[in-house]
Amino acid sequence: MSCNHDCSSCSSDCKDRQPADLHEKLNKYSIVKKVIGIVSGKGGVGKSLVTSMLAVTFNRMGKKTAVLDADITGPSIPKAFGIKERCMGSDEGILPVSTEAGIDIISINLLLENETDPVVWRSPMITGTVKQFWSDVIWQNIDYMFVDMPPGTGDVPLTVFQSIPIDGIVVVASPQELVSMIVEKAVKMANMMNVPLLGLVENMSYFACPDCGKKYSLFGESHLEQIAEKYNTKLLAKLPIDPDLAKSVDSGRVEFFEGGYLDGAAEEIEKSMR
Image 1 (cartoon, rainbow, N blue to C red):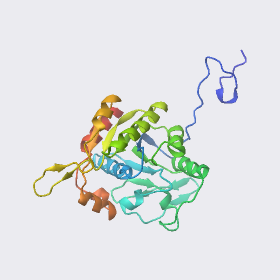
Image 2 (image 1 turned 120 degrees about the horizontal axis):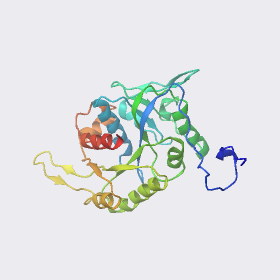
Image 3 (image 1 turned 30 degrees about the horizontal axis):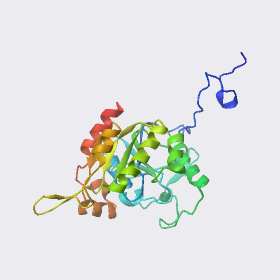
């Protein structure tokens, strides 16, 4: 009878108890319609590459896109887009940096004095920064935000899942046998957090001979089809080892790479977001 329906201030374990909403509030000047997390079970599989390419692909589809670089200790998004300038701020909040094609980006490297300065922080500072990237940055009318998460299933991915209203995730992997087990860990974490799995992307899937066009599986045959079937999801794309793509990223020109490797994946993701 004395219930005030505020579960956050009550210790009773009643049947009507609602789980606390841990999501951070957006800046009052921000609008973000859909948030997609890009995750991987281990590092070095091309998660940031896929994040960048998805932001570019949706941008080409006429959507206003943004990238929140949550990989605080290993940020690479600004490098892929060739961004050198620093974020500016005001009393209202932090302003993200826009790329040449109009993609809004926030990353710790856009706040450091030198982009090569290491971020030697303990976990509370790292997770606090990720939350601020969501709550303190002014995201202006974003259709799709892509969150580049650090690899694994530790503190920061957990913070992202709990603090930011993720609409779905894309898991990135490479073809090695060991990766199959690690991919399943990432998928199971998403299930535990009740975050929809939109699909899988395999990077470094094959190399196509420039002379004959024959495809070679340099890292072994793929096992992601079986994992996708097991978890009732889709294998959205298989990205090749493409020297031109690598050159575009290294030179900071990823948004001008002409390959449409993720066009089909973007269509599937948009369809699932409706």
